[in-house]
Image (cartoon, rainbow, N blue to C red):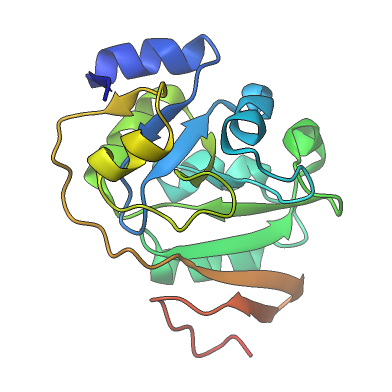
Length: 193
């Protein structure tokens, strides 16, 4: 298990390498958006499955939101972030180059994790996925993750604070004022059908 400090993690991320870090839900593997291919390769993930953009705070990822969904994004994010909620929304025209979905949408989340937010505040938003090989049950500890994904640096210190082990709730923006529940998780949103 190769545990590294935050300053080295930032340096490696800026040079295109992925880093594994703790979040409030499950450990994540993340990289800068321009290097998303590395996550697909490392996880053996189907390229048809999009990645999630994580920010340290709402304003850090706001520029990725298309203006048609911005008001709804601000309303939901102000109530439920930081936390275990992922919003799938149309991506802004100026950020389309980072899209990993086929429908010009992007999943965005601000985790309630000091480790994740501290890292992302320094690196900028990261494209992420759970830190496990595709098809393998998610792991919760640095030790488990390192066995599943050897060779990928892990942000310390370890042991990490305990995470929930439950994936985030996912909602999809349909149109102004209307959201659809895609995956039920820890966060319950009464206004989403």
